[in-house]
Length: 84
Image 1 (cartoon, rainbow, N blue to C red):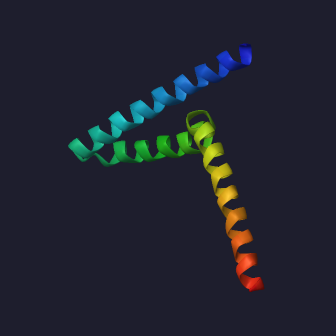
Image 2: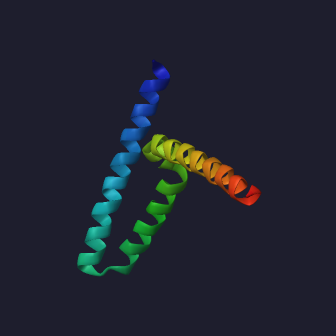
């Protein structure tokens, strides 16, 4: 229960940080301020490396599973075609 609550809090934090990053990005485009663009890039990389598993972990796991299934099917089909 505590672990689930902690996960949800981290997910809310990373979602909020992503929202702030998007707002800063829009602001930097509108005002053409270079230093804000640099801040946006740094925050984006931070979110990508540290918060990705909280924001997109379930999606990435499903995508990885589907890719592995497709890869196995492709290899089976390739093996069948090479035997002919």
